[in-house]
Length: 445
Image (cartoon, rainbow, N blue to C red; front, side, top):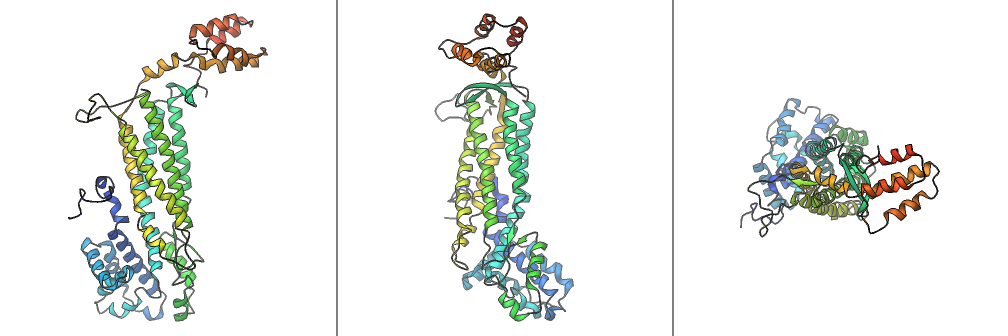
């Protein structure tokens, strides 16, 4: 059976593929091979500037060399996989693929400097952080910024809408819809700032991190300086010292940061879901959309539910990766390899969730009538305001007095509150002030 969106085992490559197909250029087998080739080519070019035997390297061929990865095609990737089928080694297959492009008489003398002195992880642990860095700057951050901006717009639009707050699921001191949304904006912006402080770290140091082969061949060259500059040229931060592999601590920090962002969005999704169930929000209805296969009247908050599910799934994988990757036996074991190949999975589920939230937010319409109705139905929430002012004015036992008034099975209304204020032995001016407090204006700063 051929692989299609209908036959794919993973929903990322099936049901959701259209939402995340741009991620293929980073996290697919094709993407990883292309980035490996980029590292090999850029390493060879950097090497040509310091190796005495490469001083005659044809610099006018640099653009041609870079086209090997810049114009890398799916057919090229198939060729690499065919080589791998013979070598049974994925990185060695990349090396042989590049060597086949060195049949030019000007390049042929330098063929053996491809992958010179390197181990596979010098390529993998440079290619992978580079592809993640590119994905974060080109795909993830723009989508996250757009989503935060959309929530911020809602916050500003509804900044003056008073709303009953709920603590422990019970009516509490009123708030404003805009402010409650701004809480999420603030939390997300802080996490974005933290995200930008985490470096994308690369390992580049030979078989066990000591440049053994490089140093024995060219002891006069400062290989640590060379590696530092090479990684910086790629936009990466070099980890030193290392074993054969990158220790992944910064990658773990990245995953933990992404997990926090997803957790905030889970919190947001659940709150919006709750507001919809309370009828504080209505959802715009699409004529052809079906909410339930049995109940024609239903319009379900599926976008927020879908987002919550994808975010939770992504977080479970982020959690595993951030705890597993920094652990490796002695100088290296292979357990990181298959895990690294799955980096795109939680990132894809995160992007799917972001797009679900975007769709859901676009459908929201505020129901101010219902919000005002709930405020008017809960005059007891201004008891806090009254007892606080009475306490300031020296009234005896104000908290206990308001507690006795409001903790009954009788409904507390505007009339109840005003009759209570009239019964107090306080100055007329203070009574007037207290009567001016309503659930609609008792919203703080």
